[in-house]
Length: 95
Image (cartoon, rainbow, N blue to C red; front, side):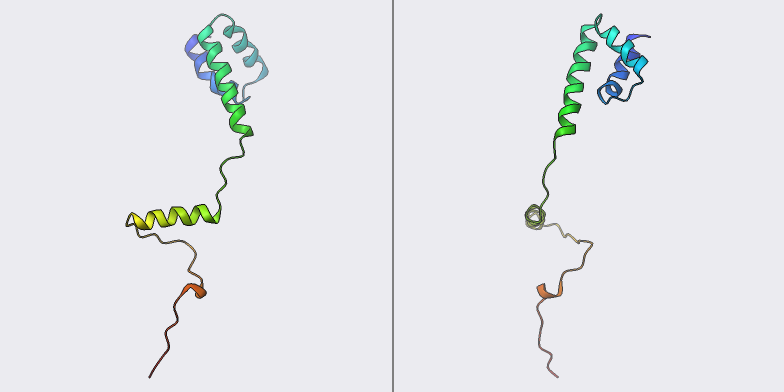
């Protein structure tokens, strides 16, 4: 295979999505090509770090902080859920 094809296979290698035969061929080629080896090692490490990262926690406090920031910027935001009744001001009815 040519080097261009090897470079395109690096992302599949990093995600462990290549068949065993192609993985062995790519690893063999990486001993000859230092740039390819660098890409394979660094991308594999990055994928492993991302897989173990639990991600950011999105709490109600975070949601409200973002919502308030959007309101201060002048955006009119409509959520999918209606506002609870206890947040609405009740006016007395007079006839």
